[in-house]
Length: 240
Image (tube, rainbow, N blue to C red; front, side, top):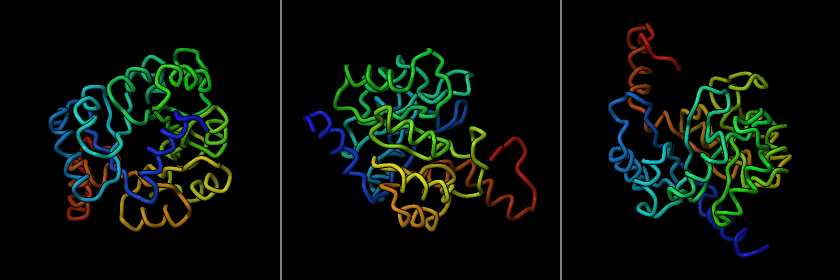
């Protein structure tokens, strides 16, 4: 293991056994502001988060080097089904914005720039050898392919969104167990982790860490859950 691989593993090790919180707001929402993202990120770190996941270059820049915990950065862009840090250009920009970990689409689907996942990771690593790569996957085959391509960790982020797995009400725990058993790199459970019990179940299955977003940092959705429970009717204009 060289010094760069040791640095990447060290970043991931600081998050092992803990909670990573995704601090994101969607375009057009009142909280879509890097200053707000920083305040939310500072709040979740105060609550015990061992890392944060942040979307968009301005937001990554706002939190990088400020929080004292690793920043998992990504850039959602474009209309292609592959839109989470979809190209090498996006990945390089996220790293240059200060992310400790670059999260990107780790599925086996074609990437918009035509590069393979392996080529993308290799080129990113050539420029930023200490920055870890998290592959957001939708299936066991995705996770195995991403590990083979050189990803430092794999996430279950896209389970239920690529057509290979059913969309479960909570996290896809069956997939978590499969990936933990098959992969040697750390596994991050992400996607529809809506309760503390979900998070605990994920870690009990052997995941390295668990990432929670909506249930902690998206008040619009959290409020709608309560409103629907009280009124028995879905909130117009909100998808879940």
